[in-house]
Image 1 (spheres, helix red, strand yellow):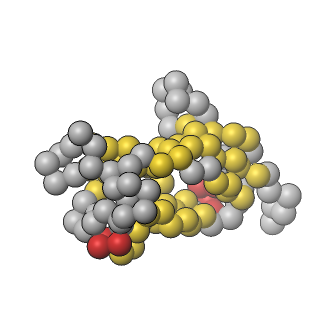
Image 2: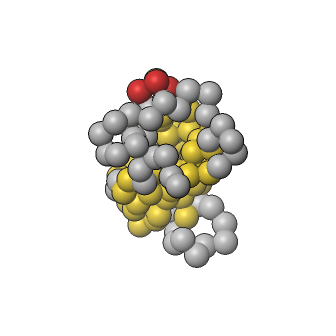
Length: 116
């Protein structure tokens, strides 16, 4: 039985810009789940059926006791992503090595006009 609640959350990324977004892991949509000393992994793909990832996020715990973590992509990474719609998910590896999906959704990558 899952100890966390899987939450759908869509967001946008600007091509060529640094991306950083905080998320909160909960047990029921409002009660924070302590993620201190746990590992997160996250990727985005063109579709769930895609055999390779478009990008792998750096996922770091911000405030473990409050369940807050951050996903990050560098500007050089976002510059190499073709504009359009993608899917992503975030997995939390629990202390007993169980893997739970905690966030998922659609990522919209907006094109970059300024290319200096």
